[in-house]
Length: 298
Image (cartoon, rainbow, N blue to C red):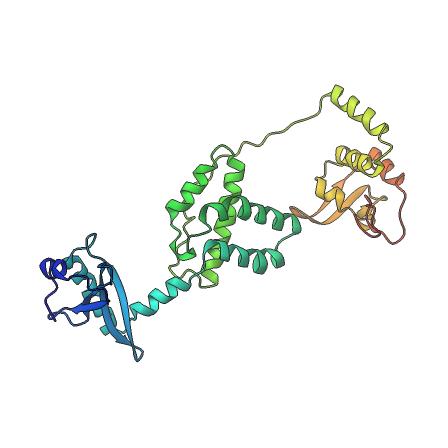
């Protein structure tokens, strides 16, 4: 045993075999000398009936005095009942963002979200979150990491905000599932970009040209009918694509949508839309207004 100082560490020569130098003053503080001469400071202690070692860092970037201070902290934690080695093992086993994203999509999105929302979540994960943060441990992601990702999408503010929203849900679940236990979400106080809602209306000339195309659309009558209903009802595309006959109330002149993006709602429709609906031939066994080529499908 020697007192670990700069002089004794630099005097430790490589021998072609690994060996240890233990400090004569601080029990458990040592230096590992690798066969090639690399020198690593460490702390050794007994926890849970096992001898454990925690690497503190290499000689050079870390001085003997800095290593001694860190070793004292580790050894003090052990005396207070902590186990730095077990904590290190937990960190090594912690999920990466890529792994956690797969769990998020499989266990949360698949059972709690609509198919369209699942698609958007998966798109955000595959295109933006995993490429940027995938290799990081969930417990290591910081607010700076989230800000960097968000600001990297500054030119597409809507997309940037959607990605931030998905990350916020993921880190809330990470806390709920005890993947992160610090009670802090790295999305906290990350400011969203202002989104300017754009409204675009067809001009009379554009409407006339669209009408002409729809009248001549012999090859895809279902698609033409879908577009007509979109124009006449103001509904979203998904609402018309998934519209069932049971939702159409001809007598009241409304569509009773049980599960739109904003929840259940009633959409008043005029005579023109009712006429389009009346002209659609119903297919036995198919509940949808806009039908596909597979029996029973949209």
